[in-house]
Length: 452
Image (cartoon, rainbow, N blue to C red):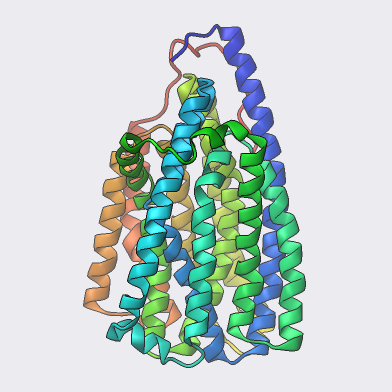
């Protein structure tokens, strides 16, 4: 790492903080518009279609989450490495990293489109296609939407490495406005699960593709090596990616979407719909957390590369207090007003008990807490502990499912919470033992943390 003076370190910390605040501000606007879209989308969809068709809509939205896993965790690793290359002003390295990421994603897409038809003939997936509200058109549409988003992901992750998330966030606001108009149009003209998927997720895919194109146009030097990827970079990128994504993306999505697929596969459409509604609420609440942690990741990586540990430590303390307070308020609100609000929200088509909300709230709080720790430790490259803890979560989850499968939304959230509670406790213990301390290079440098 290049040696810098205390004055230069403080100045860089100031610029990093300014970009981070810009990213947070635009991220807030993007998340607010996303929340508004989803708050409109779900009651419209629930009222416009049958519970069985709404269940297929929520299940296929979950399928999109699994398609995003197909990048094998490349995104966070690419963001971190490009952030480091950007801090070192290495334009050639940035271009090689991006081209290597595009190569990996392109190869995965080719394999996916070859393997997809084969999987469709297996009994488990064939039974899905025969379920009420499900057909081949929905599956093909979701595959196309997921492919577009997967192809755009390396460009968006590279953009995050440059701390330019505000650009994507602004486009996201515009895309959500278009999606809202399309959603209302579908509901009025021809309400269907397929139409709602296109209106909500198809618009998002188109927005991501436009942002990716605009990114490479603004930084044309990245195109110099776009079609000449560095093959030696692929194995370390994938290795880092899997270590990054396994605890922060792969395991959470399996824990979140797995019970939904099981409920749907067992023919419990009403419980699947209830689980899907609550998962959407969790996604909206998580968006408020991610609104701060997503811009934090490249900033933390930049701070690690420059040795600015004092800024990292102070920001972590504030983030922990904020997430803890938010989680407590979230659980209280769910238990107190959740049943009444959801009855109105779903048009009395679905009913929820307070026990379901309590299990759901505890599960959500544990997920919020684990996510925060993963962001800080992954930005610092300390991935071994979280990889092991996430593997433990997965083992516990499948162990519980082997003992008894969920039969309702309540039991589904209880099982997920039981799977991640031990790791939340262990994470807190390990974090206190491995507190981040300022180095000699940054001692005495006063850089205020982000006010969360």
